[in-house]
Length: 203
Image (tube, rainbow, N blue to C red):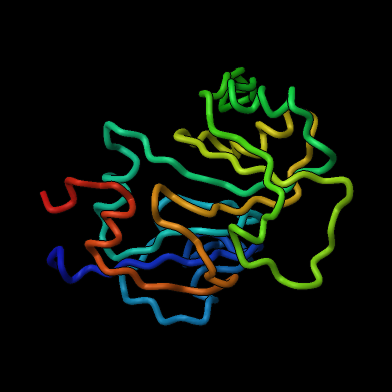
């Protein structure tokens, strides 16, 4: 398949669906979405079973390498609902780096990141009506350039806050926008790479 024949999609991955089309386990799959993806479509990166939001799918196998193995790390932004009220001190710790456990049970200090408290989460995603609210709670907007396993969940847990909801709302300039849960949007090739800020995709 030549470069121009590839197709590019974003989805709003609902909770309780894994980021793959096949699994030996009895779980929700990408193929369960109400869309007929072309043969060879795969997810770029992952969101865990309980996480929601922006997930990239494509038939172009080069995208994973271009996005994750380039010299410039790409920004990924998450809307995070945590239990209880986040203090200014805890917010500052998120911004400057917190200690989490990574593979091998090693301590790791996260790279400084962008983090802010969000007054109105509906600005960033389509919230379903009638969802149960946990009170008190805080919505955070966290932007990372690194992606350790369950990093966002571990970061807020290190500050004694339980993550109640995790929604990826953007990767660079590629945004979830008003795409509803389970929705699929196809994106033109040039727009796709431009919004991901990948310049060398034609090489």
